[in-house]
Image: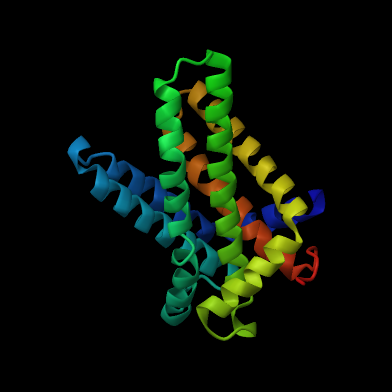
Length: 221
């Protein structure tokens, strides 16, 4: 794992144009924060679209050998990232009643905090897993027929390497939280926002692609 992370880091440092997607994401977050509180549904929709767009652009820049992006490939990759996205909304719809019940229930604070943390952790890991699913599918798209065929190949790889990805995503989350905490401790809000966007891109998109390219993953069943 250490060698793989080193390879991802070295590849990222040699390609400064990879800074564009997280910077666009940071700019988009600032713009969305200007929306009125009453436009929550619109904000949620725009946030989802921005997340897919930023992730798609990053994946295409990582997969490509140059600084340009082919429009046709960009659409293909965007399709692979947007198709699984509703699963995040389903998770939110399923857990919202539970969180609402916890807020109204008279339970000890440690139990409440622990349960809330588990819900947050599950949502974070699901988001990382869906990003990895789409990233691997994008890397293997030429082996499949259509978007759903590519997603099926990606899902098989993800399932065959659950242990690897669980440890990887847990490490990515810890790194993200630590970097954001340090940035906020020094009142560097913009840097914290950059870490919030860039670290998941590296950990849930770049790392799975490189792991597949370097044959670090088990063959799917």
